[in-house]
Length: 476
Ligand SMILES: Cc1ncc(COP(=O)(O)O)c(C=O)c1O
Image (tube, rainbow, N blue to C red; front, top):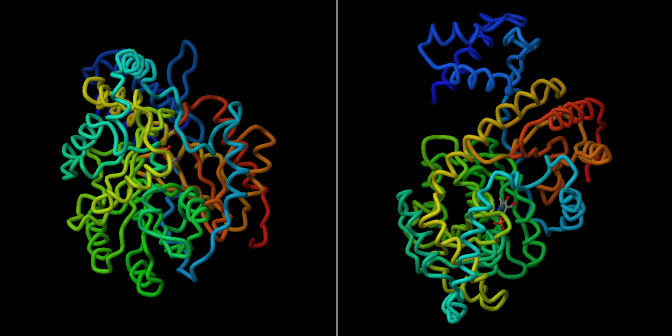
């Protein structure tokens, strides 16, 4: 922790413990500097942080005071979704499209969006790399960069795996148009119409849409809101349904934010290897960790080439550039064939620009700042939920990413909240879009990847009020 964070954490602790009470004045900046032997700017940073988190308020010309009813986190959600049932045909697209259309409105409060604020990315710097790549483009590079993709970019991606201690050869990397294309190509490479595929419950709606489009059946397996998929239930589902693949988010799952602990990932890979079931591992949020190091993906434990690891730069560096990849193990050739027969290859200047940025642009510095910002925003956001939402509300506290999975009191209808909120210009992602059975009716996924300001505070207060007055909806 930095000095100002340590100081803020000490004061926060004193407020939580009741040592500092509502209305108490914090020590003046001069006294705090003297007592702690730190600079005035460090004290100011600490006080700003406490203010942003809602613990203190500044009074002009008077100092900082502990806020009335200082904010607390809502209780943490840690339950497991219901047991598996039969496999189902998927028909979610209509419901999802309607909601996605709404999230694309620029003026709406973007709590329902799947993207963090575009202002968090080094777009100018990237633009310079893109301009240079286009200006100096070797005419033959359009041929050289056909699928599996630009060599320099695949090498940089392989180096990033290596720096995390994961052995991935650049030969198994196929460059794609974002992670979503990678996931779809992997799915098409390992399963056919009518096959069963295992997903988490809840799962990212795009996984359900892909299954629907390819005519595959979903088996939704119970998933713990903190520790990811239930391995016992997974093994039962494999024995019962003989799935052709698992499509899982093992780190910072969307929507719950759950992460399988390392040992569980190792066990998962062993289990799938015993049953010869490929794992399509969606790891788009892996770089957005708040801890000391990136959680290893399941791919790190794979010796059989059975894990098709998919990721992209969309969430951590370059949204809109649409560059992702699959490190597809023994399926790399099949995935490359799928890519060649669908979209042929990804944009050449964009691949070159990203390769050069990865080599020289300062990705790690950018990522450190991004992670810190997101972690701070999670605190402010979660505390505001604790403050404004009705009693009985729970929320996850993921160790990375930018989503909170909020469980409203039983009976709250998140679809009703979503449609009422939208009329007021607030967009949210209701629980039922994350399930083939339209379950999770009293859940919302909220995106905290946008700057906290008066409007977000108003929007959360409004959502809290809507949640307190929403009604039960009969099961779909
Ligand atoms: C879990 C998950 N996987 C994949 C994607 C798609 O990533 P990309 O934008 O790189 O295609 C998203 C985007 O929302 C996501 O949330």
